[in-house]
Image (cartoon, rainbow, N blue to C red; front, top):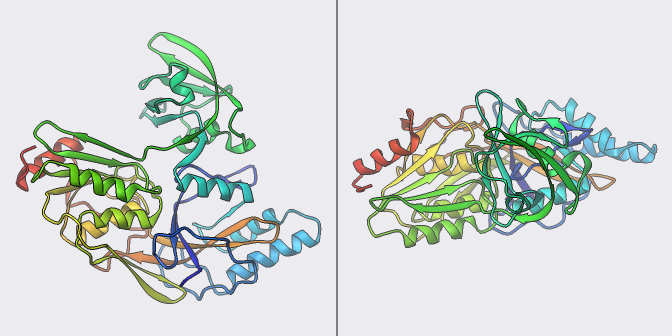
Length: 397
């Protein structure tokens, strides 16, 4: 399938008539699965792939890509918005994973997969009572320079209260997605720290993500946390495994990982496998396979931590390690996103994605709509549970 680009994407929300692009909002896979990034997208005249079998989120019917392209072309000829016409056509397709990007949104999406984004450098989490708390401040970011700290409460963004909002929408407000806010624009953050309540105005900046964090636990075990699979993650994980103390175990923390480049997920699997099958996927009515590189560490005790926020490429990796008997999976059932999308360029420059197939684990399990069931429930303290499992595998953690 050289020259054809496939995507494993998570759901997108529509805002102001355009698909909302978030950092790590999708998962990109080149058709040849060689690790190279896709080049220019084919034009609207490209032939649609044949119907592929699937479960939830049925694959796009034959001609669906052409139908969307025709709607965009007709709108352009009539002096109307081709993107809005394409969105209506996509909505009628019944494909719950489909999306339409503007040209700028798609470029931003690709930058996010390269590990770059525009923002203020905050990570946030919604607590059970609906409040939004800062969970991380990226060093050197505008938020760090403004003195914002982990644990601060985020009350509002540009005057809009954020309590109760999904974290994805909060991220969108911080980035200024609705207004296509570039680096250098300001955003007013309403904050609280203890009894202190104040407003901090910061400037958005072009930032690079730090998707892999590595730390050593007392006793020697290494925790490798991957927040998303952007470029270079596989090599970083391989290096971390090689630098871990001989014989010590690794906890691969994939909780909250919403996806990323599938080639990087395969490269990460290669750090723990000596070749062999990672996943299969159907597209264009044909079966294709993804394989790990040889030479990975196959003896080091390994536990994979997952939860309901583990999605797409992270599920692909988890399924490979579980089915191959390489890791004990601890946590809760994963999200269940295993469908494959293909993008095509539309008249006017926008890009449409439609589902063309689904991937399966080495054991033949369909992830889409099902997720991956862990080997052991995490209980109240997932990390402690993982360390206990490592000890049972022969790791003194």
